[in-house]
Length: 207
Image (cartoon, rainbow, N blue to C red; front, side):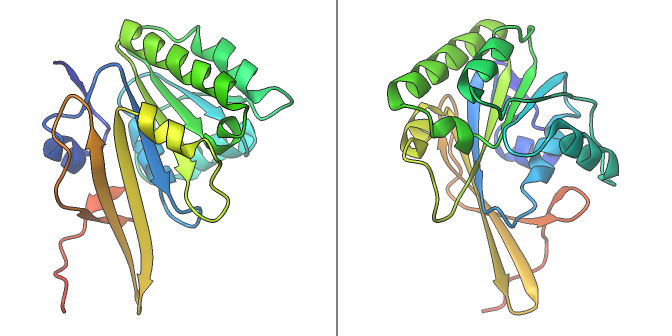
């Protein structure tokens, strides 16, 4: 099975070379975290369509340009208008072979009526398989998680769960991969440093 790199070397090694082509990944993270770095790293791997649902396209482009770490040059489109699910669907249909798709954040689409959102996910999955592409759905954790998040988690082939906590004077980021269709889920979390880019935190935990 062919694998697609995430742009994060340590994660790709842990996952046996990357994510299986044609997969949908859910990246679940706290709003006050550096999870956006995962999306920035992904844009370095291949052509990327970035659909933004909350921030403007200009804000996303500016953040990419200001990031001191490596980034690609994605096509950014704002789909957060009156019919975000319909707009996103029309753009997904035009994705070329082997492309990345980022939906940031998927929460807005998850607030659509359940049957329509389910159809969107099924159509997206079919298109990813046919084009051998990779989709990352950036979902926010917290008190206002949409009701359809369970549906997203079930339909996703891979789930990345980023946990960010403040421990004294240290910010601790741990990544869990509890779900991995077509591969092996990780049985331990990875401690990460999220600064200019995503790297492994090699500091030792002291009990």
